Amino acid sequence: MADELQHTDAMPKDLTFDLIKRITDDFSKKNQIGHGGYGIVYKGVLENGKEIAVKKLHDIESLDDEKFMNEFVNLMSAQHKNIVQLVGYCYDTRRKVVLHNGKYVVVHVEERALCFEYLQRGSLDKYLSDFGLSRLFSDTLTRHTTKKYIGTVGYMPPEYIQICHITEKFDVFSLGVIIIEIMTGTKETSKRADMSPQQFIELVHENWRRRFEQATPMYTSEEVESLRLQMKTCIEMALQCVEAQRLKRPTIAEVVSRLNILDDMVRKISPSLLLYKPPIDPLSSGDQAVLAKIGPWGGNAGKAHNIKVASHRLLSVTVWFADIVDALAFSYVDLKGKTKHQAGPWGGPGGSARTVQFGPSEFLTEISGTTGPYVCAVADVVKSLTLVTNSGSYGPFGQGGGTAFHTSQSNGSIVGFFGRAGGFLHSIGVYVSPNRPTLDLSRHFRDALQALTKFGPWGGSGDMDRDMEVVPHRLESLTICSADIINSLAFSYNDHNGKQHTVGPWGGDGGAAFTIRLGAFEHIKGLSGTVGSFGMLQNVITSLKFTTNLNRTYGPYGKGGGTPFVVPVEDAASIVGFFGRAGPCVEAVGVYIRTYL
Image (tube, rainbow, N blue to C red):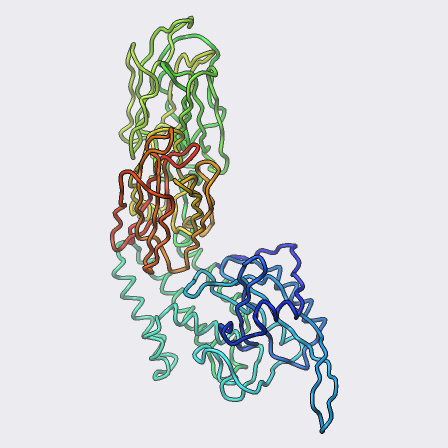
């Protein structure tokens, strides 16, 4: 139900207290950026210019040094996209002269500090900091009394606010508050104090019931019941987490166990709410229909070529061409959906290569071209090819002439090729599936796919087509390399299963790299740029600028010049992915826009 933690073998970096003092300007107030239950946080700047957050821990005499170090190594190795990453620590003993009973004496003072990655104010892509810090304290004591409490009152348990006790149930209380806010919103959360637990549960239950009914017919009655069960379980568990008496609160292990039980229950009742299948997922055994073979068209020369495994969906097609089609290659996913296969190149070494990378919701529906005699060829060759998908047309590749051929699938899709080739592509035929890939998806995924729109591209028509292979759900980050023009583009995104994918870089070397990391509640609402010439290059992307729903602007990247373009994005929509063309630089860019139903 939750993303698992990943662990690395990287050891924490041991920092001296003198270094910590230097990078925080001796813990100056101007560098103080926050307070927490375990210490004061300062902004520090390393010698290489990197910013880190330094948490100077409160002095706790009963804290065992060895356990502190062992536990910290474990925390250092824990990596998760929603946890603020620890990057170093300081454990140092220094001498200090103090006045005691009218005399100056030398005492030994232990200094402990934790160093985290620094997040700019307003960044929401990390949810948890101090992850596990309560474990550092709870191994040696079940509760700790501080002189005063520091932190956000709404997230702190009563025993900490009233008598400054830090217990092993501190984090459990905070977790409960966060769950309640997620389930209800801050406005409804304020009503909790004026209601009994049962009244509050009923209020939340009624609000979500209305939401589910408004979503009908998106959900079946069985699925609505599963959703209500999840909601009710979560809010009941959250209320237990915020019990005033700490002994009545569950442990984190009990929370995880209950969520896993709920996950199993929902999986049995309505597995479609948990499983989303992208186009490359396998078909069910009953859907493994026999592929139809159409063609070939062309001459009877060269070696016969065919696919070795039945295809479910084409991923890309590469054509080498000049005045004729010299060679053909393609990649596809088999019926099991887990393996990507490569076929070709079939043919000779001549011509320029053009790769068509099909989008995640794109499939081939039509192919046409011409065949005929060619000088030096012992038999007819394929002289031109045009590919048509549900999203657009590619080609013609080759100059054409000769006998025309054509096949179109109104209900099915073209999923592979066969033919003959030697020094040229002599003939070509196609494999056709009676089903289109999107028809084999779960209903919820089809709804999401229908909300995905492809706009563009803007720019030139040369070099290699670039696209995504998995349907995007949310954009996570972008990296643009630019100087005078946009040299390259790379990005990462999550699919509907929450798995992260990285695409690119599309383009060549050069330029300075700029990375945009979107916060958890931040998404791109606007893209604009310019298309123009640069040196010997015609119609390339000369600038890009991005805007988000948080009224942030990134860019412009590149010096601009040429024809401007603006991507239209509706209010209830966001940009979740890209496609385009790129070679030595980014020549064209288009976007995938998701509309929220």
